[in-house]
Length: 400
Image 1 (cartoon, rainbow, N blue to C red):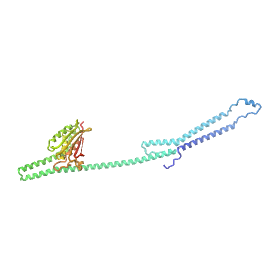
Image 2 (image 1 turned 90 degrees about the horizontal axis):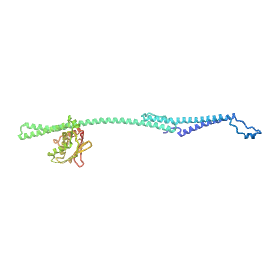
Image 3 (image 1 turned 30 degrees about the vertical axis):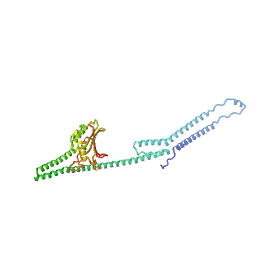
Image 4 (image 1 turned 60 degrees about the horizontal axis):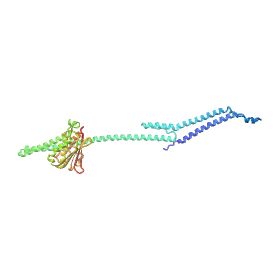
C-alpha cells in the first residue's frame, strides 16, 4: 500500500492530549489572572506601628477576609470547567479518529459476510485504522474477482457437462446402432447358412436321383439344420423378450440357489461333453434364498457350464462356488482352459460375440446370462484367472 495514511494512532492520541493540556493551561492562566485582579481590588489592611505593638502581637490572629470565599469558588469553577473541557475534547477526538472508523469497519464486515461484496469503507481515521480500511477494501475487491472467476468457471463446467452429455448420448446411439448391426449380421449368418443348406438339399432331392439311404441322410441333415435355426431363434427370444414374469422374478419369486446349482451340476455331469471334465462344487452352509425362479437360474447355470465345457474342448477342470456376501450371494464358475481373448473381453456379453467356429455356437448364451442376471437386479462379470482359464462372477441379490 503506497498511499499516505497520515498520523498514527499513538501520534494522534499524543496530539489530543497536547491540545487538551494546552486548553487546560489556558483556562488555568485565566483563573490566575482573575485571582490577581481580585487581589488588586481588595489587598487587605496593613498592621499599625504604635506603642501597643507588643500587645497587638500577643492578640489572636485575624480571621480570613470575606474576599477568600469568592476566590475559592472561582478557582473551583475554573478547575471543573478545565476537567470537563479535557474530557469532552478527549471523547470527541477518540470518537472521530478511532471509534467511528472501527464501527464502520464492523458494519462493513457484517455486510461482506452476508454476501454483499460491493461493500467499501472510507479510508479515514488514524493511520492504523486507515490501513485496516484500505486492506478491507482490497480484500472485498479480491473476493469480487474470485467470485466472478468462480462463476465463469462454473458456467464453463456446465457447458462442458452439457457437451459431454451430448457426446455420451451420441456414443450410446452409436453403440445401439452397432449392436443392431451385429445382431442383424448374426441373425443373417446363423439363419441364412442353415436355410441355404436346406434349400440345396431340397433341390437335390427334387432331382429324384437319390437312393433311399441318401434321402434319409438328407432328411436327417435338413432336420439338424432346422433345429439349428430353431435354437438360434429360441436363444434370441430369451435374450430380447420382456415378459410379465420378469417383474415377478425381480421382486417376488425366490429360489434356493444351492439346490439350483446342485441339480444343474448333477444334470450336466451325466452328459457326454462333461465325461472328461473334473466338475467340482463348493457351497457355503446356510445359503439364503435369492431372487428369481428355479427355471431361470437353472438356465443361467446351464449356459455358464456349457460355455466352460466348450472352452475346455471336453477336457479340463471346472469349479463352481456359491458364497455368502453382503446382502447377496456370489456365484463363481471358473475353468482352467485357454481363457477369454482380451480383444473381446469387453464385448463377451454382447449378442453373437463368440470365438467358436461357424455352426458350433450362436454367441447368445452369455448374452442370455447377462439379461437374466440384470432382470434379477444382480451383476455378472467375466475375466481371466492369473493361473490360466476364464472366471465368471455372478452376484445375485438375496430375497427379502
